[in-house]
Amino acid sequence: MFLKEIRIKNFSIHRDTKLQLSPLTVFVGPNGGGKSALFEALLNFSMISRGNIRQAFNRYPFSFAATFHRGAVTPGRISFSVTMAERFDSSDMLRYEIQYSQTGTNDDFPAFTIFNERLTKDPGGHLLFDRNDPPQEFNGLLENDRSLFSAIKFALTTNRQLNLDPLVTHCAQNISRFNRFRPEPGILDQPSRLPELPPLPLAGGPQSASVAQAAPRIGYAGDDLAATLYFMKEVAAPELELVKERIQEIEPSFQDFEFNVIGTDRIGFSAVFSDGRQSIAAPRLSSGLLTFIGLVVLVTSPNRPGIMMIEEPENGLTPQAIAAFYRCLKALATNSEPTRRSQVLISSHSPFVICEAWNGEDRDFIHQVKVVQGRSQIRKFSKVIEEQGLQLGKDDQGGRTHLSLKTAEEVMGGRFS
Image (cartoon, rainbow, N blue to C red; front, side, top):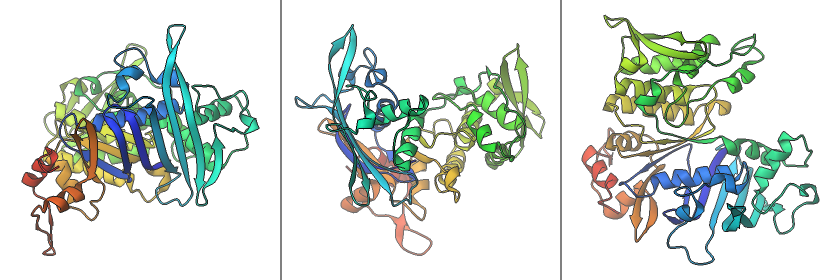
């Protein structure tokens, strides 16, 4: 699944934000500008598309009232308008709109109502669903706070037959796989629950797809790194060799991973080096190397999400490691095999990330995020440079396109906005 465009209204600091997304999209800007709130909005969209809306909220500070934009006028409602497709280059697209709000409480729990919901397919603008006049086959599936995609997922899990466009089914199955990440060394180095291994044949055989689906996944803060590495090694996943190659780019003496079972159901890992260090347990690795390992495994593992949001991946990394990880992201987002791609959104405060992204062949996927009069404003980085008339350095062909670290720092901090 690929998100082409999204419009967010009345969610946190995003009063009315509309942007087009790329296979790799980079968001930069000062603290408090709305980068994390944008990721939270995407997760909220995912949550309301996989279950009842009330499951996407809890009591303060995760309540609807705490999420709602302070400047929204009555009867302001949170709304999403999303354009999605199966792949970046697909011509068939779905345009989905949903608008909802909290409308009271029910048995001391918040009650929500969906007011408007429409789904059309392009090209042609064919109306597939309108909540005001739903198809007969959705009887008993829709509720005041259960969205179309949530109803479809419920029908799929209960084997209820619906006459759906294949693209609708594809998107309904993949919306729930949005995920957000911010790996932390103190979590990455922890033992994981020992994963169950799939039956033979292993990777490369006819069950390779099911093997990938059975693989553990790294969590938001980096939990289950040990289990993910162990699973990849035990099933001889080819992705593990790529992980090793990426690590060797910044640490040439790194050789392999080894594992130790803790108790009866936990697994830990160590990194093996070719020099005098030999084997070092994960908690003894440097925070920067451990973070880099976690990030590379995150974007390389077989069961990674189709849409990934990564917050400030540069934390603790050297410029060399930042550049190496950015190359990993670029390779993932633009893989020649569509089934091996993931759409990636990253937020960053690093001028090294900005320069790495800008000083390439394509640079129109970088956005500056900043607060203007109490609401988040998102503009393309190229627009900031053009409007401010910033002086860029000469590139290898003699053109003025090279972005320096100094200029990147100034734009990142919101000086030119």
